[in-house]
Image (cartoon, rainbow, N blue to C red; front, side):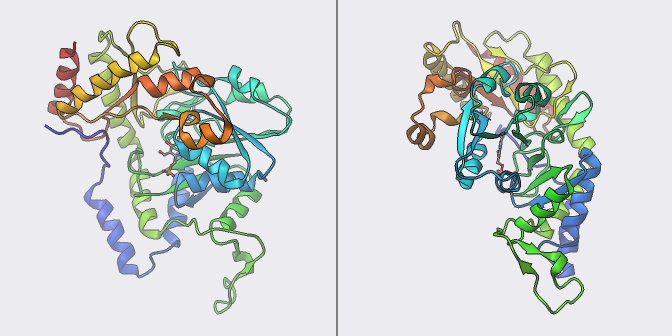
Length: 384
Ligand SMILES: Cc1ncc(COP(=O)(O)O)c(C=O)c1O
């Protein structure tokens, strides 16, 4: 049996929607992108949704629209996908890392507070693995300082805190439609914002800077004006048609993901070497990933490499039994580009490093059969 870590969930109607776009002859950003943006706003409760080519480009544009650039510092948790930090680098600003809480894998507000400086212009909390980060406690730490919050909700689809979908509290929120996410368009991203002016600028930025208000809208044979530097970060109508089909059945997709997580919660609760994902009061988890910690005795920065070896042996054992796993994500401050450029040590953000070394993501995807789940359960319970 070969069990993947993730598997996109497509239905025949998805292919039909794509066929419709191909038959229309209009495949770049067009009516299907607008339709996807509307469907996204309806599902999440966002006021404005702007589709782009990935969450990385979404973060890049959200930073630019917030005026972030050279000389600025942007604080982000170290335990995230490298794209969060890379987007800051693209703007010329300096990424400044802070630590996480290993119970939630999300930003630790106490650590955040320690890294605020006179140059801090933005913070990017990350809603990791489908659990909403506590944006209210981030805002409390920021107080009345003029610091922008941009939410990295790449994994935040279906993540709720006190009834509100992730991505909506900050100046903007950025989502990913990479195939490891609950809804996929192959590659793709979405920026949500309450601010109408930001939405207008974001629409220009994703399209080479084109000002479509001064364009061929009324005079179809003329070109738009370009008054700002933009990018080609557009989503195609082919991707958007797929996105709309998926978001329209989001409740079902999320229900299926949560059902698998609930089965893991019960099946693995007595497995001593695994600490299962915790859901804080007031939160509904989206389970982009089901990430456990491999625990063995003392779990501090000095003993973590020994525990990590044991974690890797466990992952090898699962792989030998046809079960695909990965670490949750990585400690970006320990990646060579960042550690060398900014002179960072592994121990600077100990929780992030421990999570990097000891986390294990187990397979989650709609359509996982009882037989597949039973195999995972049996293999894990046999491990010594
Ligand atoms: C936390 C986080 N941020 C950003 C990204 C980047 O998303 P994309 O692959 O759509 O650019 C990812 C992708 O996995 C992610 O997990």
